[in-house]
Image (tube, rainbow, N blue to C red; front, top):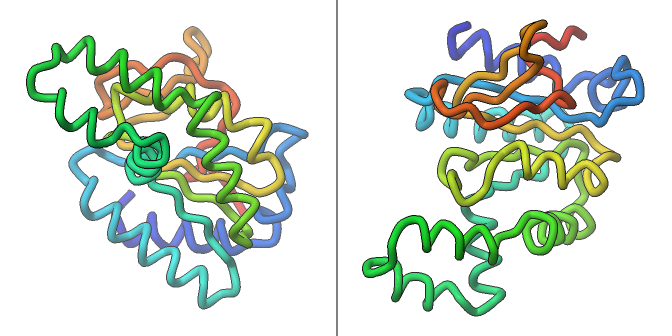
Amino acid sequence: MDRRKRAEHLLRVVASPRFLDKQGLGNEVPFFICAYGAEEGLSMGEDRKDLIARLGHAGVQVLDIDLYDLSLEVLKDREILDQVLEIEAETEKAELKELLQGVLDPQEHLIPAIARRIEAEPHDVIFLSGVGEVYPFLRSHNVLNNLQSTAKDRPTVMFFPGKYTHALATGASLELFGQLHDDKYYRAFNIMNYEV
């Protein structure tokens, strides 16, 4: 699907009362994946911002959360960002990955930060982006699994640079950048297949 068609589909779906009222989900968590080619990263960022503006004109409030920016906020709030930046150059990648996975643990730190934003900002839908930028420190399926109890009242759309595939033999899976298998994740719907 080309950019224009994708943008129109997303606007039509997200602005629809059926989507905002979480109809037709069969009591599933209202999580949606908007997968796109990794090579479209910059244009998708522009398209997402344009979509937010167009939704605003239609009276739909979007809580836009960039996981990369949120991760930096968490590191600043925990007063360790400067320390991480100081040691980054001389620290082994595996060691740095382990450190950041600990200090950005979704259950302990990231999801509570998202919960504070959900409480503080009125919204009709949540957009999550920055998935590729936080890899491998944060994994999208881990964020979604931990977010289920916090973001169940409003639809959440994760903009995912890669593929969200469904196969009878293997189930549903997120493939970051279309190459890195990011574990199985069954609970989200492909927003490009959502009909209004």
